[in-house]
Length: 329
Image 1 (cartoon, rainbow, N blue to C red):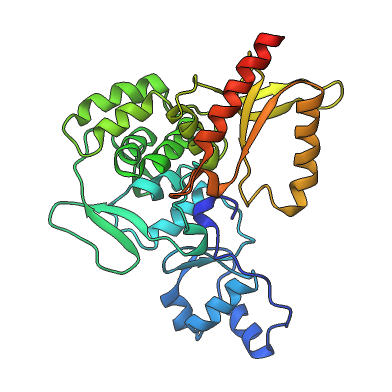
Image 2 (image 1 turned 60 degrees about the horizontal axis):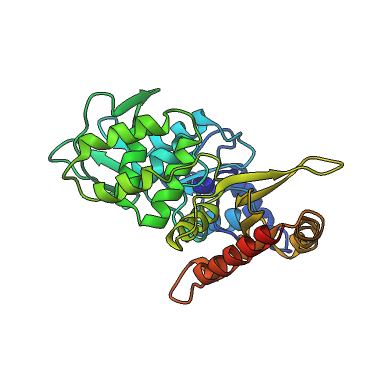
């Protein structure tokens, strides 16, 4: 599974092969569809066996209580099948789970790559699920808020964006809004118009503020949060994915920047900027700085998160340098 909400717990593949008895138990499991832990137990496969299969990469664990072979192609139909195993027909899939179903790629909560997420579900008045697999409650919906796909009820991309923009932490809310906007299921103008009906709702002020900052070109949560820190530092609104042409090959894209000042910033997350990528990143930025005159500031997780974050100071210094350099030019 390539999308965040289907990412299994990250573990190194064990070097020792599985015992023959365990291999036989694995062969009893369905390999062309998702299945519940309960079904595995009925086939004689214990929970500890399932965990071992995940560790060996033979299964993935997309949501609580559900497993599936990584050989099954990740698509909308698969995600629907996964959710239908645990979501009752009269309930509605909402929030991060709805975003995952719509294949918004930046919906993962912080730390969810280290655990198996609960499914966000809301139920008809008077009903609340207590099965340990879902985070459920009650919520009111207007016409058009809920769509039905193959018997599964889910909040529309627009309603999902309004809910996540209101209810998540400010950083994660902007990342979710950027990601959902990138689906092209609604325009930013339509999102702004939709906020009117949430007057008086919890978090609506945050939602209306963040809608003004949404940019569907953002490609990662870290990049969205870096853009938020940039704006919080009082700098002019940057462009996303600023392209710089090269004599040969595709242009380089800077995460966010001000082309007129040749000033930009990039977020190096652990997932895509590990040790094996360092040499390429360094060479790319060296060319941008020396050959093109760009000032590039680089942020890592500790620079934009937590009490010790310092990216605002780095960006302000870089911006002032860019102003002086542009004046000299």
